[in-house]
Length: 433
Image 1 (tube, rainbow, N blue to C red):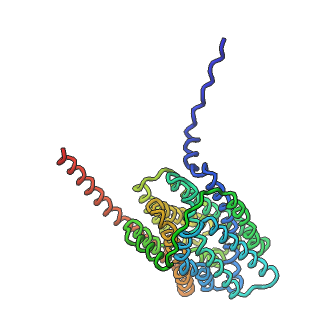
Image 2 (image 1 turned 30 degrees about the vertical axis):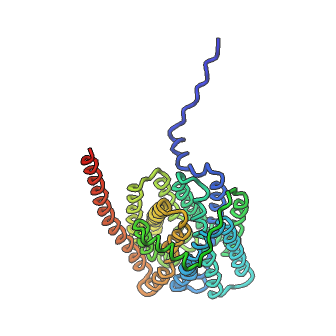
Image 3 (image 1 turned 60 degrees about the horizontal axis):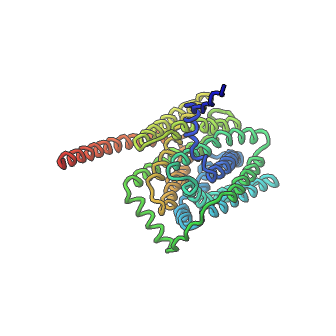
């Protein structure tokens, strides 16, 4: 008797759903980039934890914590637009490889200085400024490079996975950094960050891409002007960028005050400081469930609104808490809202932009997301120094809530416009028939 033919096992629903959430990782080039990036950003977050604690240990000054934020992000404000021009002209893989190598060198110098001698606050700020200069070219280079690693259909998922790697590192990096910091001091955090760039550098060598046609080398200012004109005359891009700039200026800067909360308000020390940052990382990972599902444009708009409301409400609640466990919970909520909002903005921009302008538009995204931090960090440090960290945090939360109110207004306007367009199309069809 013949054996019954084997039946092909039907795919299980959970496996299909899980596979769709990681669809971009099926692309070998993106998989290499993503794994290297995931390791390097863990080291970056470890360094950031140690860097802010080092400045606070050396100075005991909330104002200088704000000034550290200025040193880290002012170069992004000044140079990121030039970085976008470079990303549109150069080989993006070579650009990312160069910036990652420079990050490795900066972390090694910082770790060596703290190891062999007591650094000065001025010297630490100078090295932080160097890190910011590298980021001004690294951020737009990495963001625009993703589009070369996946087909257009997988681009939103690749952006979400890239955001997940970055924010998963916000969970792992600060937690490890806080433990290492409390046990061994700042030096291992800096040196481990230097080592974390090696997998990314190795994986970039293994990525195989077709050669890009050389870009025309017009004057930098003309090329930059063309990109800005395109971005700010395209209503969809302009609205997203302006809102991101407003929220990024204050809403994202509460992190510069976390050492004050951990050191004085909650009295939880360096380990508690690391865990507060890690809690925000846990919250950001919860946003991943939403971000990696299939999102049409109305769903992206809703994610934008929910993210802003969660971020603003979480900041206000965090500012009132004096119980460490409650502060951890509110920090988780803040992390979820921050990433849900910023990653959705990234998706909406990258799926709308023309490829020839991608590097320059992503440099504007970088400017609004990160480059607004010098002003925001300085203002948050000044407000905290004069009125206290809780009041400064409340102002940041109210800024986000006001942004959400504006989004609600814009959604209503868009709904009316889309309804009018649909009615006009229906009338045209009826008249034609």
